[in-house]
Length: 263
Ligand SMILES: NC(=O)c1ccc[n+]([C@@H]2O[C@H](COP(=O)([O-])OP(=O)(O)OC[C@H]3O[C@@H](n4cnc5c(N)ncnc54)[C@H](OP(=O)(O)O)[C@@H]3O)[C@@H](O)[C@H]2O)c1
Image (cartoon, rainbow, N blue to C red; front, side, top):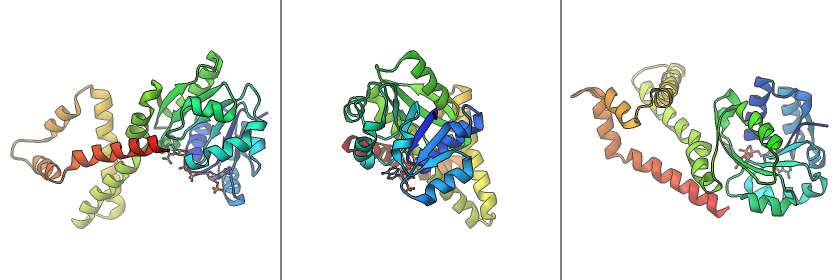
């Protein structure tokens, strides 16, 4: 029997599978993924060496089943899958907005888990929020956490913080990519080759993130430390403030929370 199943094999499933296999948590043959189209499952098999199927029922037989389809597909895919779960199946949602109570009702399963991973999982730098349902045993929780920790960092949080965590880590990579793109555009405008500009901008973001995590300093203090009096950086800070940079980011995250609550 497969240990881990994926219903859906898109961006997020591939990121998770890549992370799991990179850390060797399970062998490729212990993972099975389903999707809607032959092209998707062929590509997943070729890339990861995992078992693949067009039949969701096959993937439902795994011990831990990730629901890796779009939130709008959850209802129909769970309805199709439910007859094929065993009472011991651990069902893992990675979608925003679907509560533990909803998942349990829809699937008939006691063992349900909510995760909000992000695509940096593909390079082992994921940040995943975890809510483990009361029906899960300590062993189930250990297995889920072992899987999640294989592709980055994770933290267990109360369920009411899931939408906030989704905004802060699940969606935010998209906004960071936009910022990297914009930073690189400016460097290109000044004559830097584009590939080099992406390396400079991306490494600056990696380094700044590590400074926040490892220095223990407030982000504002770290920002102040980069801004010499009368210097170049403070000119950029002034311009960002004039353009509403921080409020734009905050509003964007609040919009994602609102959307998650509407799903
Ligand atoms: N992308 C992110 O950064 C991110 C972050 C956190 C959470 N999530 C969550 O992760 C979930 C998946 O998102 P995604 O970005 O990976 O989506 P995606 O790239 O569009 O992948 C969706 C997958 O679902 C498959 N699918 C569609 N209908 C199906 C069905 N009836 N049965 C089985 N498989 C079916 C698709 O198959 P085909 O390829 O054959 O069409 C595709 O492989 C969503 O709930 C999303 O909210 C995503």
